[in-house]
Image (tube, rainbow, N blue to C red):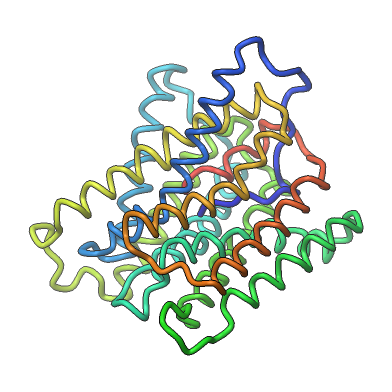
Length: 331
């Protein structure tokens, strides 16, 4: 997934921009491009890898690497948490990775006309901040009026995007609904992550979330029969390369850059990734995978991104960085 809810965006330390703005923009470019490109990476990975199996492999490998780094840097007790923290992280990992990312992977798999193009998937996932606002409202919060205006605008764009057109380039409705289900699961996980007791260190939380998500994805993949008749020899080099890219670029490099930005840059600047990522994904899908970009896709996409921009710009962070940053990993 590639959109983190504005209402759940952690508070950056109250410092001005550092004296080396080049580092800030380097981090932003990494987050913009790498997280925006993961949708195309998923599409290439599932060309010959079973969809949920590929997601389980990605997160299991990323968790192993991150756990090893933490162990080497912080010593034997680096991953020590209590049972409640571990359980909370596991719940969030299942919601974000198995429910959220897993549904996106499923939607992008399949033959043409059934699979959702990577750019469309990114635009649909961009509705996550809008869904989180609705969850906050149900929970008794009172977002600003402009926030509700942004939510309404974003959902108008969603309707425009998935409305049947009957022509070439029409968005597969079943696949689109699958992505929306995934975005809803991601939103619930994002909403809960700030309201239950999580590990204090965001990198430690990420390890537990990735492990839980990988286990859940593997169990569901086995239940769907993805392992029957599957042999690694059938997987193309393109798919293996895409899987490695997702693990390294999406789940490790971009996440590290994101956490660093949360500590060194204004949150209003960091939050711009929420509406830059979909634009990057649509552009890469069109340029590298010949995905059609029709007029109604452009119109719906622009309206969705405009709604997200309104929400991101009018909302203010409501919780500290160390308790929340991990939920944005794992794109």
